[in-house]
Amino acid sequence: MSDSSQKTITKKELAHRIAEATGQPKVVVKDVLQRFLDGIIDELVAGNRLEFREFGVFEVRERAPRRAQNPRTLEKVDVPAKRVVKFKVGRLMRDRVCEEVPTASEGPANQAPKTWSEPETPKRPDPPKPPPSKPDSPF
Image 1 (cartoon, helix red, strand yellow):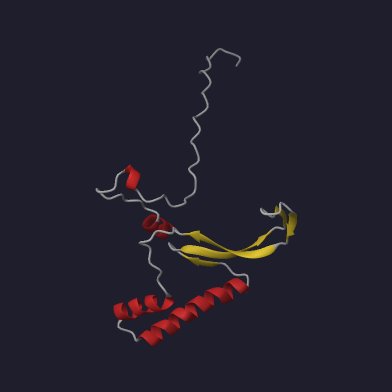
Image 2 (cartoon, one colour; image 1 turned 180 degrees about the vertical axis):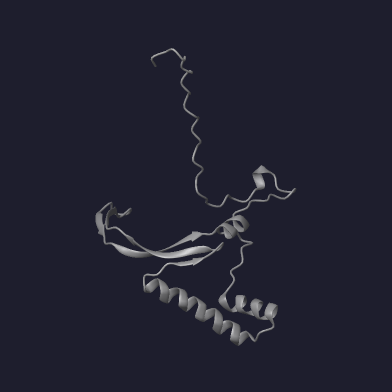
């Protein structure tokens, strides 16, 4: 989202908010926050999966090598395999962040752009049931 009302929150600002809410010194909160982030990185480097219930899951996956195309030159290039960090959103975060609640002043034309979400899989109709067989029928 590149909305002009969107604000960037830094680690410093987040530490300040947590310090105010908990009454802890900012320097202690900032240290704990940094150690937490470093811990996430260390575990991912070690190949571990981090699961924070209701929040989400961090894991490292191997991306297979592939053949790609430079959009400017249209030249084919080989892209080597690499490790990438994946984050799967947990239920609580998805429910709170991705929930769309339009206000009364917003009409369909003024609504914010939808956030990305998993596409809904269309429900298939149930297959037709065979007719009931007769008791004296060989079928």
